Length: 251
Image 1 (cartoon, rainbow, N blue to C red):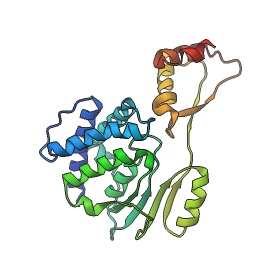
Image 2: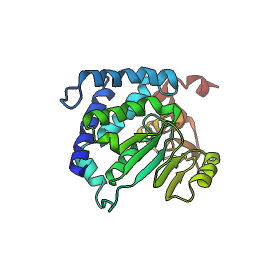
Image 3: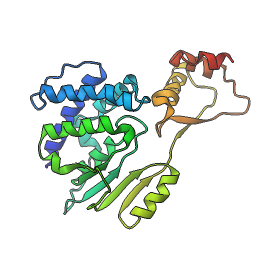
């Protein structure tokens, strides 16, 4: 599949994701029929049933983030310098499931690089990712050859992208070390505060801490502050940002 066609299809998904993030169920696109969309929308409730961390607000937030990125202009800028391979390879993706659609970036990266995806889904994010893969299939039958979902042990692949904990990374290294691989371990982010932050900056920090219940690799889990730092303003802005933390702040 040429890059232009891929970017057009991804842009179609981006428009759908933006519609979803606005809690709208009316998406008019000739590439996707009504039955396909209804099954996709139904997957949101099922995803929360199977994984209660995936609340509807967090699902909508994930789709909103992807909707803003999946457009032809952003995709073109992001992919500058990508050189199609001389031979299409199959890249196995062992997906994480800590936040909704967390494996989608790897899937898109493999497709944009001109290769084929062999996707081993996490049980925590199986419903939404399968729903998105089905959308690819309905956009073009060729994706059935480009995105394969592994139901059993991985086989017949040329490289690996795996994401997991420090413990699982040791097993990944053992089993996949002989292949070209990218193995990710546990990651979180930190924030450095000086005491000069504005109220708006502290509110945004609250989002960085609490979005997706703090389970994302970009969620802030550590603060570095100067000695004697006054936390009153910090907690106050976090309360206004989240509301639910009143009991913790009042203790």
